Length: 245
Image 1 (cartoon, rainbow, N blue to C red):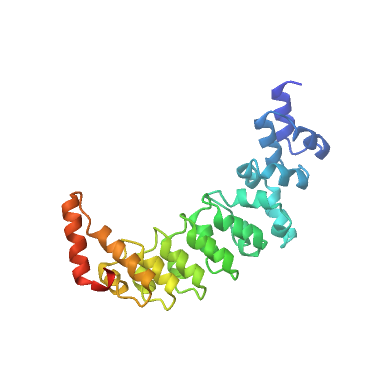
Image 2 (image 1 turned 135 degrees about the vertical axis):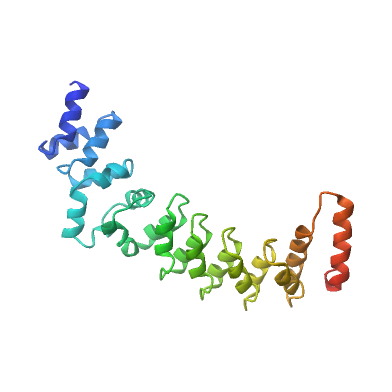
């Protein structure tokens, strides 16, 4: 059958579901994309092809109706398909607002995915599950506001992950430099962009590992291309903090 005729069948909303199911196995990508966007395509076919063509799935006028009929539909869509849908920069409100209702493993996968847009990661930042919040803290796409929300998190691992993020704003680093947990202070001490006054404070921390990390960051901060200058800076720091010698 000619490609043009197949395309016409795949895009026609009056094409019988069984014919669309057959067309879903076609090798031609354009035809399968048309099948995903067709409102007469069986739902199981939509979910199967949706992980390959998420943008076309969102174009399907049937999708918002399915969510209207079944508020728990997000729990029934295959995990891989959902993760791909939330990689898209523009997600419709009816789907976006249900992200927090997705299964735990889906929320974790979305939180870990470096292709997840920042606004979706920010929505998951207050998640009830520690593992999701840790993943959000470590994701390079998490926006500053999401990191700010997580900086005072009750979980040590989340706060330590925030400390390690290259996107964490300075005022959050200042807050975490005074954290009660040594692991968090150690993570902050390892970052040269931590304000010098807090690195100096951490260089006198009760924990030896924190002091050493802070001293290394101070060395980095005061480094120079000239090795003699670097050596002089190290001597100066040891004089300033004799306990680091």
